[in-house]
Image 1: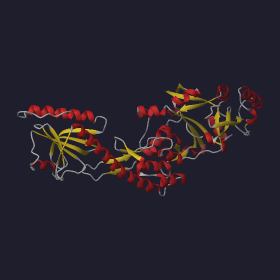
Image 2: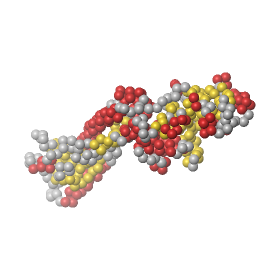
Image 3: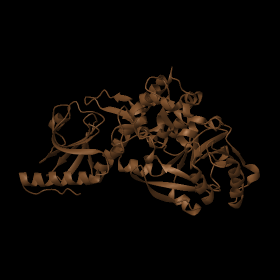
Image 4: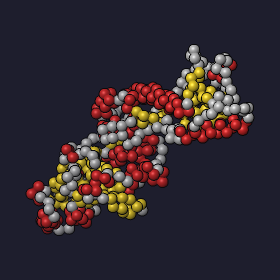
Length: 457
């Protein structure tokens, strides 16, 4: 955009044309930022300006358009009285065809600039202001997080992580004025925080299933991982939100982004080893005790992305536990001392991935362990792991079948227990061993036996 000297009088039409052109160009140059461009603006100092740029309720840059100005006159500076040092003021002379950056605290208050320099200076100021406020809020949040952790029933790993690694530079601000953890990778603080609140299962885990499901698992040599959107208990989908966000969550409220993330995360449920051959769990998950219980050894070296194995964290609203601590972080609010009294809050980016490791205390008797699998299309194509769509619980959802011999799969089959109400148990012990052998399994390292429960009704 170029402003040329104007010969002759400056009429109102000329002023309006330039005003609209300036507004249009500024809108285009700042279209990717959270900036508002408003006209005939009454500022916080009660003065009117032709145009103003506002970011997060803060006046960033002012424009005043005049027919002509005299650089030797002191009358120009009346409009900059009590002007904030953290804002820019531009004076435009239509007659001269020039733009001036003004600062009346300097001996030479007028600095001629091009339109490109105007844009660059505004962007530099916005960057600096964002860094300044981010540093202030980041430090406040660090102190808040450490303070709120005191007296909470948190694991030592969580306390250590907070006290050793939490720094203001770890944060960023989004356009909704929400503080976020900057590093969103697996090694980032948010992922590490959630991990620290969970307990890894370091030995063996067990999974109950029907005899038919077992037959298909071995025949295809694949383990089924289900969508997080098709959990058997629909209350689970909103449990984390109810505790942490203090609001109900339903599938209908999911954004497109939530669906996209959710469709890449899959879960299979197990129980701890001590819950193998459990009368209650046979009834609930073992096809009324006619199915099987598979016991797996965890390979801790493979308990890493794209897999993560952890015990479920059981919690409720009345305990000072991990979920309540997360709620305290989510409800953080910072209010600036500026005239606009801007509010800043905090949000999680990774909760959709980790929230299914948190469950109501009502289910704690199950002693559940969950295996999370994160699907990455570009990486998994070569491993022949593909999404398969199914109709489950009246929802069309993706699922994955992961080869048991997949080199990244962290589980090794070690034991098969046949249910206490299964038919022909002794015969099936021998048949299952032969079935495993014919499908490529090393039966020397897999124990197959009937349940030790003999009083099932």
